[in-house]
Each structure stands twice: as C-alpha cells, then as structure tokens.
Image (cartoon, rainbow, N blue to C red; front, top):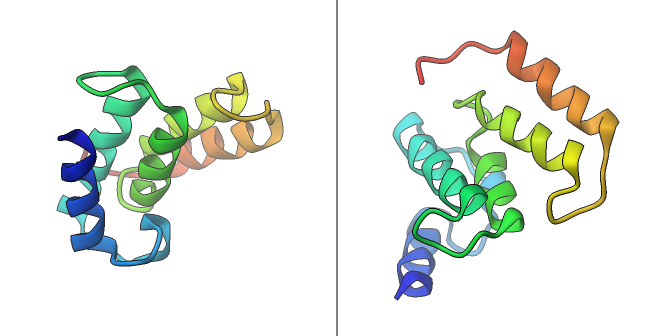
Length: 101
C-alpha cells in the first residue's frame, strides 16, 4: 500500500521527472519535507536515506531546514559516501536561508 500511495503522489506532482527537477509550491514542499523526515527516521515507513535525500532535495528551495538533513546525510554517509565539503555547503546554506517553516 505504501508504494501505491507514493507512486500516486509522485506521478501526480512530478510525472516522469524527479522531484528536484520541478517548480513546486510551498505547501507541496511541506509535504515533501514531511515525507523526507519519515524516511530519514523510519516513521511509519522503512528507513531509506536515498528516498529521504530525494524528498529533502525537492523541498530545500522553500524549506531550508531540509538542508540540515541533507547535510547530515552527507556528513555521516547515510546511504552514500561521506562528503564533508557537501555537508558544509548544506549547513552554510541552511544558516543563511529564511523560512516560515
């Protein structure tokens, strides 16, 4: 059931594109951020850092706090190789961004 819901969500909002390739509104970004958090922490879904990274990447323009999670994924090598430079970039961008979220 989880896969069906995610597939419907992705198809409705992104079609055949990856989420990060689209221009999406703030409310959709909040949903993507929430999905990223669920996958990052394994809340109600199996923990999956690659999916978390995808959703955080898609929401980072309008939800800068996503960059904190992206920094953590890079810094600790969660589901990928450790990349301290990229982590530093994400953390710096998060500190200089403003958001209502």
